[in-house]
Length: 197
Image (cartoon, rainbow, N blue to C red; front, side, top):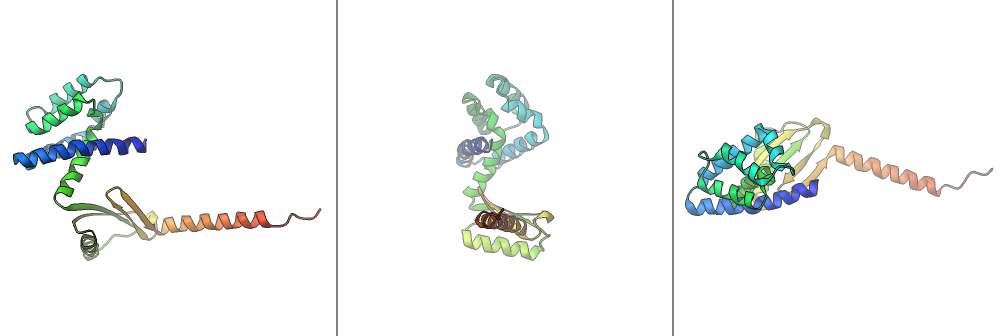
């Protein structure tokens, strides 16, 4: 399932890049961006629509008809033409990934990078700013930083930078230590001489 989602994101990026570049050439980036935000919000608010678009037993013509009823007259012509191109190639099941990918493409084209930080305790605003500035200097980009709290991490942080995930949490280190101890104990037991009868 994860591989399929990754494949959907890769294909979504192709359509998203084509739409973003067309919108930029036409000077309609703001309108198309608003369309994509609206589509993303629609899919988030109506999970049944996303399931309908992903349903293998529903033909593409029906999917496109429903989608056009929802968006025609309210989206830019460029956005509509890409949606229709996706339908011609039976790609409407990737609409959610397409909207997510559009946001990524836009950030990349504007030299911005999204970093998600999950930590065990809330960070002060100056700590968030230091992280964003340090990452920006290291990566040569403007940083959009999102911070959330997960007390189960116990300490340390988890980072998601694009497709890369780095787990520096205490929870992960404790799991690794437990695994090492278990492996060491099992190896020791295997080497112990058999008891004399």
